[in-house]
Length: 635
Image (cartoon, rainbow, N blue to C red):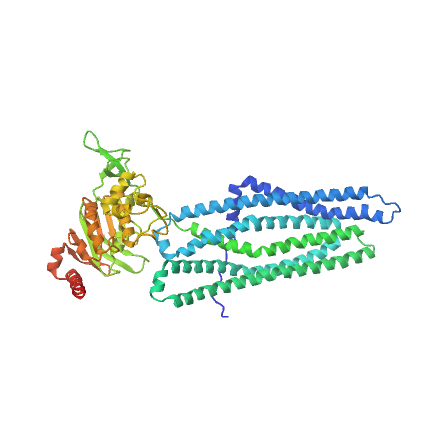
């Protein structure tokens, strides 16, 4: 099997500190309680081992030579020993129970913060990361993190405390035998460090490959219809096998080293146990070190107690490294730069006061204004009219390849501006710049005379009604989906918006009408019906500016005629930007912008462009010729 040669990624050690910060900042008292009970559990374990020497030397050995042995003292000693171990069991239960609560709490807090951060990320982040990979951070990475916090972390702390306590007890029992254990310990430490170093990078790789596989699965699930239509099944299986093979390689390498470590350390600990037994016997027979039978048995037990935590730590190694790798991916998302917003001009409700000037009000009376604070402390209110101006705008998605060149557009309030051109000409890019999904490289975009960079993004987008080509419906009722356009809209306003969009007719025929539950992106509705709901959603927002990106592209001709009247009513009095392949829908536009490779090559109204007999003329007449030919064939 061919191995990849690229540089292996490594997790950041600061990740551990950051995770501990989540634990100590949120559950400080619980964590202190955990540490206390870990100490008690470890102390009980060591005390039980040390008590073996007393039990053997003071109780069992004297009884072996007695003619009339009395077992009262032995039974009391055994009872004391039982209480010691019982205290250890209770302590272990308490701290493990508390760590489960801490693990679930940290998991919830991280998931909340990650989702909150995701809402602040720019659109560009989602353009460059697959949804499946992002989802993998919410599911696989967070779950491995929870397991580490609730299981591996307390075991790690307990093992460390136990090792320290046992070492002290060993020194107190026999220094010569302790030296034997120390040598064995360093051998075990060297071996575990070497193996852990090899497996760590592969566990990081495994989490990345798992995210890639999940991303591809999500992509294929969403495109399953396309896969079947174009007989892409075998090719998709081949591509999946390649990604799954990479996951297999990283998982195999990671677990090969990790799974080898435990039996290796177990055999080394058994070897140490044998060496201690031989050394202890030799010292006792030679009368050196003052070792009794009880002391040798106790030290052997301590040797087991010393090596067992090391084996436990190695056993948890794979889950710890996997969790840290997942945590690194989670924190990478949380550390992404949020969408920058330096806007200070806000959108407010206004009314005319007695002097005829605009004044801010809490009532929604349908008049909006831009609240513009100035450097001298004064405020001005500019009524929202919907005047949009692009002045010499250049834009590039990656900073290298320019996709818009010197675009200049002037849209007066109430005008309908249409964009036509081939796919990739830059039509949708222009509207993405207006709502500031992306920021321009050069030039200016002004909204009612205000540079949109000065307008707070949330207020800018609230003033825009957008109907995209790809309609997204959320799990919820039809009423709730339309109300996404304006969350404080009353039921009557939602119904009025649906009627305006021409959606009321089919909604009333649904099983529960406006209360019909939608799920799976509205899978029970036709594409045209979903599009009508999106138009109704924009209508209920009642914005001064509308952006219709292929808004009727998924509606059949009959439905288009029914909805066109509602669309005209929706657009009345508003500035509207329309992107449409059906040129017949934009004939009444005040201005039509013809784009080609990021440049506006023609502009004017329908009649003016037809007279020019340029690119628009060829597009328009070509569309009608195609329609005539299709009609003739049908006849």
